[in-house]
Length: 105
Ligand SMILES: [Zn+2]
Image 1 (cartoon, rainbow, N blue to C red):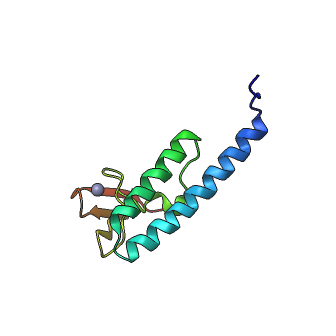
Image 2 (cartoon, rainbow, N blue to C red):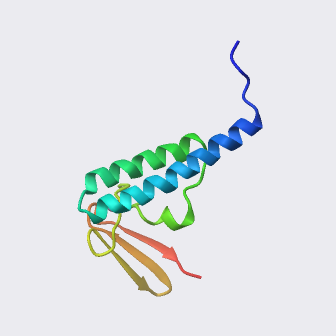
């Protein structure tokens, strides 16, 4: 008989998922800085899948590190543009040529 999953197991699962998401984003940044964007994008997609599977939100500091349209890893100056315009942070993705606007408080 399969072991029944308890809420404690779920808590541990989501904690592990969160740790992996954090680690994947740090690795993605390292890879992107060394010019390996395809691996960085792969890490972003794995992190997204983990976050969806275990219902863990992506941490605030990494939320705007990838394009919300094409899910590419964004590195300012190299493949994206971060500007402040009329109280909003405007992120331009060089890959899909789309804008993301985030209100600043
Ligand atoms: Zn994009």
